[in-house]
Structures are given as structure tokens and as C-alpha cells.
Image 1 (tube, rainbow, N blue to C red):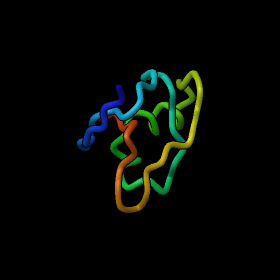
Image 2 (cartoon, one colour):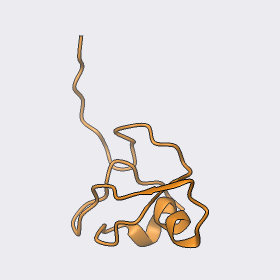
Image 3 (cartoon, one colour):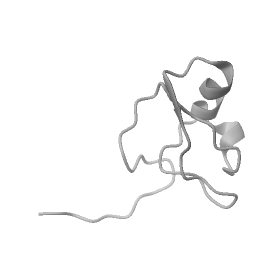
Image 4 (cartoon, one colour):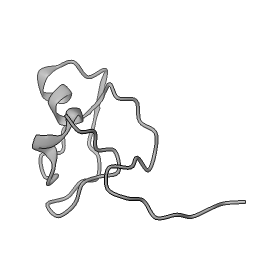
Amino acid sequence: MIQYGKFFEGENMAQVPEDVGCNNEKCIAHNECKRFLIAQNGTAREVKTFSGTEEKKCGKFLER
């Protein structure tokens, strides 16, 4: 059985390891996100572009 639920801000929609960085500069929260920080400083194991926009955070946001 598949369950559908509402996701709240800060809640991960998919489990992504904390050492995966994000290079999405369009995201409204990129300056507050640990993923953006580790992508910029070179400590990320892998860098992806998550789905944040100018109006909302992605579901993978990690607070600094």
C-alpha cells in the first residue's frame, strides 16, 4: 500500500546523505543551507542540484 502525505518545511522528502552538497544558487535558502556550504568549500562527497526555487526550499534542505 502506498501512503501519500504532506511534507512540511525542513522535512526530507527523500533521504539524501548529509555529505551530498547542492550547487543551486537560485534556491531561496541557499545561504542558509549546509548542502550549499559544503558544495562551495569542497567538502561534499558529491554535488547535485536540488529543486529549490526563488520562492521555496527544496525537500533536501539542511540547516547550517
